[in-house]
Length: 170
Image 1: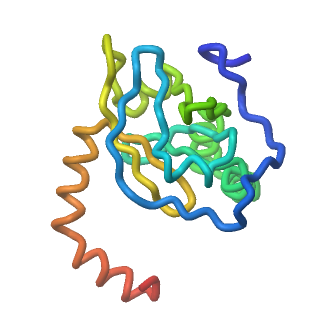
Image 2: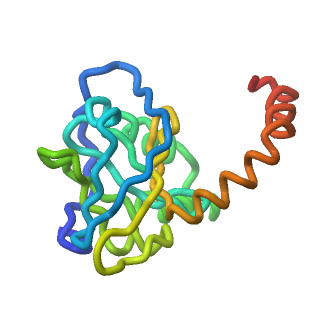
Image 3: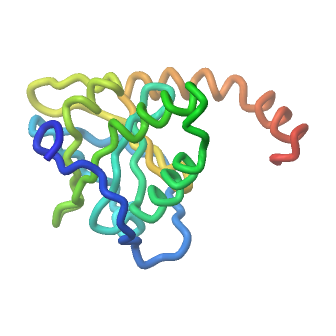
């Protein structure tokens, strides 16, 4: 058992039925005082019965299906451990990752140490978070941080699209 009694991540395949993961959309939900977060109904079927929750980037948490986690962590494992940046990033992502069961009503348990990394305060009662579908993963954000981040990105959307077009991404 790891922190908060959560089982640490193991690398065994248990993918949901669908071949391609398509997680999109933006939702506002709450984390209750027992650290349980209800996933959006649209995500539950895609995600299976168990997910991996890990520290993300930009002060959010990443949530992967087991199949997507296997792909993502496999890419990390292929990187050179001789480079300090690679070792640091792997420690950050892999060291903070936990498996979380999705219960019968679609909730996952978000450990305190991951809530703290994402700036999602532990308060009495419920705490609002933004749940964002990003194709192959879900992001969990502090609601206020998400609103501010989104405002900045919305102002830059045209310039970002142009840059991505210049490198052949769009």
